[in-house]
Length: 150
Image (tube, rainbow, N blue to C red):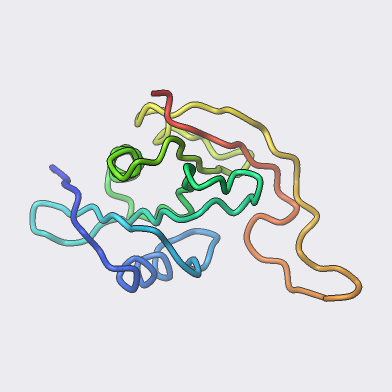
């Protein structure tokens, strides 16, 4: 089955992430989102690209793929990661990053031409005695940072 990229709104991307992402809620914002559709024009995946979460990477030339979610269609993740890098470059960005949790294979990223550039230790979470927070997402989980090889 052949897949192709399609434009999606932030609202469409967030709804898809809400329904299909394994461990994250929809993001708060984005620079752009990309969809993947099957031959019947049914949305089967989305990628959401925004400013880097890590403030040291937020240099104005770097973006982060903050969410990729699919309904399980083969090659949808790889298509979305490759398209995100093409779109970011076309907009003038010089760097694109994303993260996987320790233990995830990264097969879709490797298939799209990405490589591991850093290993990040588990984050302690956002909660502090002076401002308690409920931990979500990847707190207490080691992560790998990826970038496109070219």
